[in-house]
Amino acid sequence: MRVAKLQARLHALKSAHLAALERERTGLADELGAVFEALASGDLAYGAQARLSVRHVRTIEARISTLAGVRDETLRQARTHGLRAKLAAQAADVAEKRLRDADERKALIEIAERALARLKDASLR
Image 1 (cartoon, one colour):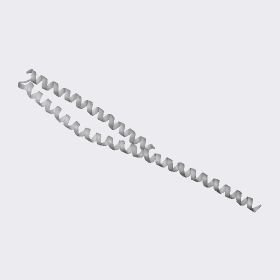
Image 2 (tube, rainbow, N blue to C red; image 1 turned 180 degrees about the vertical axis):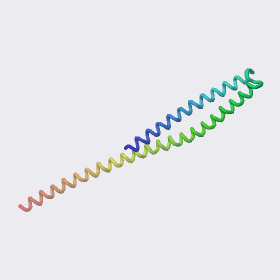
Image 3 (cartoon, one colour; image 1 turned 90 degrees about the horizontal axis):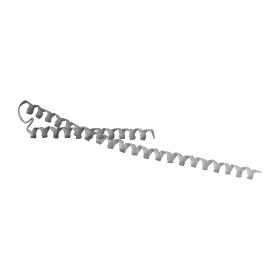
Image 4 (cartoon, rainbow, N blue to C red; image 1 turned 90 degrees about the vertical axis):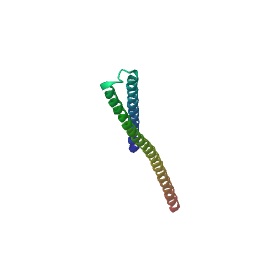
């Protein structure tokens, strides 16, 4: 059962990481929109400010692209951990059921052996 809990925690961690990546991507997209809006308004459309704005846009776009790759990998890992958690929990349930069944069989065998011993003792008397 510890394996299932660990996998579930890893899944939760990756899911939280995905949410953080999405928040960062949204923030970058908003920032990119603000830069384009400033460029469109004409305030930064010419000269050195325009070059700095273009460089800033490229930096933001590169970060968004990097985030997309990280997001895809994190999503794959989250799904893997979620699946492993589910499988580990199912395996633990099966093992628990088998143990219960084995204990019940053992108890039945002991009851049958005692009954046979009583019959044997009764027939010897």
